[in-house]
Image (cartoon, rainbow, N blue to C red; front, side):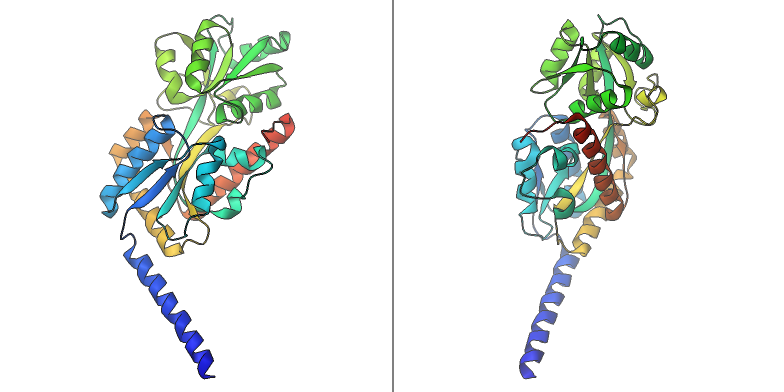
Length: 320
């Protein structure tokens, strides 16, 4: 009996220490892993938010770029980290896509990541070469069906959101396009401008300068609603009913991170997203904020994972 009392007392001490640690969180710097190289839109977003979180919590949030294996190296590093709130992941569309795209990864993202907070949702934009004789999604779809296999569809790489956005369009319209993957948006945009490829479902921020200077033609945004920064553009869904391809970003932590820690970070992020200055900065990146509870961000993760699984399975894409 005395031994049982000792065991019970031990667990009470551990529980009390855990609660105290959560109440004091954070007491040291936090590492935020971005599974992309420095300099891209994803990295810019993380550094913008990291600075804002640092100012709110009084502890430095250090962005660490850990690219490789299509996001899987950085993601696995977070999943295997101590569940103490001091290692975070910038959750991004590759995490939703890779769950189906890769058959032999060492984790289950939906199971192994703890949703913390949504940050922003950004659309892609359907852009075409000026040499293509179309000025709307309906005209493009008609042209594509009249010229099967003669339209080259660029992407910033196999399995990226720009690739899957195009595959979703093919799946929903029956358009027969040839996928041409590039190593990033830059080279894809160069060839689109030159007419070597005809269409690109690009991330909005990288295409905007080329759209504004007239080098390429924007047909529509891929979000369900109009994009506030480019209100003149229709949505793809206005022509292809039910089409939506957006990129959702947020924060995840290792599974079993204490709820008190998760809720603290969630409240901090939501407070930052409510500030007009941050909303304006994120709008410059083509994004709309997605504040909410950890559970609500978890629903976004599950929903996006399920959605892209259908597209990947229908198209037969695999990288393993």
